[in-house]
Image 1: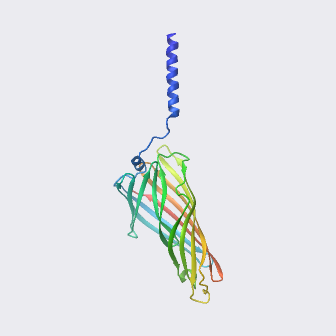
Image 2 (image 1 turned 90 degrees about the vertical axis):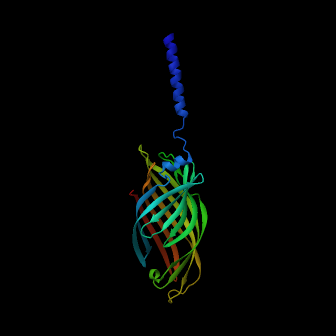
Image 3 (image 1 turned 45 degrees about the horizontal axis):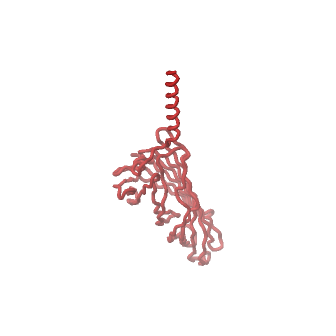
Length: 277
């Protein structure tokens, strides 16, 4: 009887332990500062990246131009301010420019702010919240990094006669609309390294007109249309070290009518960022 009682007590103990394990959370609860440290955003830390961008601008039967930019830049993480924010800037070697930004930590997400939108050779200031990472991560985690929304741009892009032969084309960028976006963890390793894939579908509302220089370019009517943008990113991360490398592909397609001729302009950008320090 004594052995039966002992067996029964052990059985009850094991059953309770198993039940407790099943109801316990799979991932630990992270504080806001734990989330920051999880992705390597330690205060005062500096990262060095090698960057190479290849851009191709295509107008069928008129131009097909490919440009390659290589650069080295430093990402400097500054002191935190407030309770949830981390300032940082990217300092580029070739252009001698600095891009300042802020990470907003809203547990469990690190939210960055997109402040520029590149459309052909134009750079417009657009502020937009972007859920870059969450912590901790696991395989098949997915979220919407950029909510569907519209943003005012109000910029002007000028294409000279060199691109269009006999016309100067003026493009007035009006608004950016995010149609949909998604980020998903497609690989997760035991050593806390991850591979994330993200996609964004958006469009830009624009107006355009030509400034006549020859009889070929004699229609100055302001027209309007929509440019469609598709972006795909693949990011390789290691927890507590941050971004190791990133690959990006963006494609923008716009249709225009210049004089009597319809034109489809295609702008493609391939980017690579590799951490070297």
